[in-house]
Length: 296
Image (cartoon, rainbow, N blue to C red):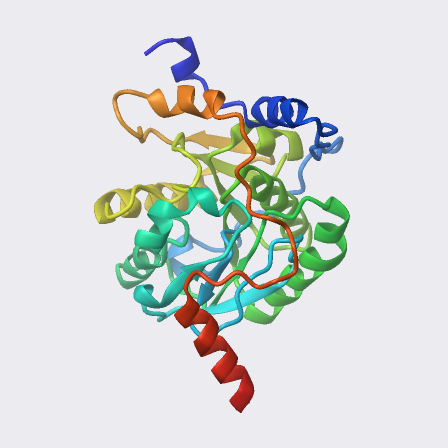
């Protein structure tokens, strides 16, 4: 493995290069000038009620899908949802192929339920949450999304929050959320695969998985791997003892990290058009959502 392969991908640099090539002004990534807030765990994880927020635009068949123009809305996802009913709508939809085949790549619900059944986690909140974290406006994140997240966390009365980002901008959004949730008194743990973006924002706790974007919670179909990753991530809630703590998880995508070289070589902008039209994963989803809206 050469030097490039050993290092996390530099997504800020990649984005800057792509914007320059397309003739855009460079995107101004958020950078925090203050240390992260810190709220200690009040009880063991095995006695905690755990909440989750995922930023990959997860919705349940029948719900209205997300739009791609800085959509700051959230969706409620029941803890007992059927995985087959989970869908994704996100501006970087070109990276959703594996997650659409196995939603656990970005919404680790089956591993979460298993950890609850084993008693590793005291309880998982009955309602989990999702958002479309590809919100380029940091102002909209601060003024609209973060207050909604804080309200949901307070209503759930959870003891800790698991945050699962997706795309580069999702990592910024979720890191900003982590700081505010922690400042409001709830411990957080951020799963991450874009370390440079996370480090710029400075969330309280980060567990870094050196996997390609779109696989923040593991490989598709790899139930044991997804379980091991999530168990290691949640354990950080107990083992991390100071603000800004990072855990470099030992899992490898594969022996050959060619995906990192491909990340630097892929320079064209492949984001979907940004407008306020809900983008359903399937036409059947659109039909169902419209029918349910019509009846009530």
